[in-house]
Length: 174
Image 1 (cartoon, rainbow, N blue to C red):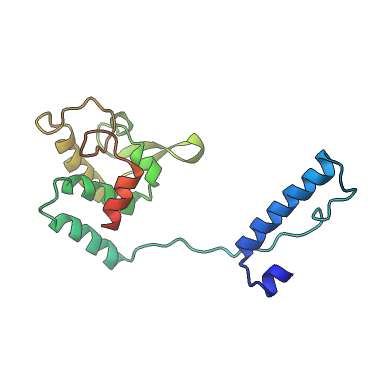
Image 2 (image 1 turned 90 degrees about the vertical axis):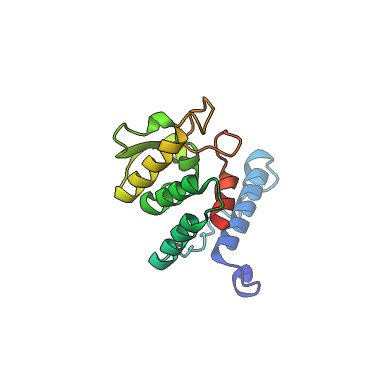
């Protein structure tokens, strides 16, 4: 195939291009009756190679947690630490973490209820490290001396609104 050999397109790129052609020829054949036969009907899609997700090594994870712990200038150090510990220990998605509400956490802080992809509800059990970090953060989060909001969100921004995806991405990048 030209795009594979000559253009050296990856399987993902070839699949995207094939999908566009299929849509075009299906429209020309079925909707507009411009052509009698759909030439892409019998074309097989290229095999997509599966890739493993990127992850941190144990040393990189420890270095990240230590960097957050050692940042004494940060006003959000406890919150940031809890966020990273939850990511590292639960495999929670960013959208699930941002969407966490106070009532999603059970009273003993042993599990959290999250809404994942497709609005599917799932329960994530917390290990000791995640529990400890979350309890420490909730102690600060629920203290009326520090937080004066009626927001139901677990993680708050500096303006005491629900934290955004971008804020968390920026914090982890930093």
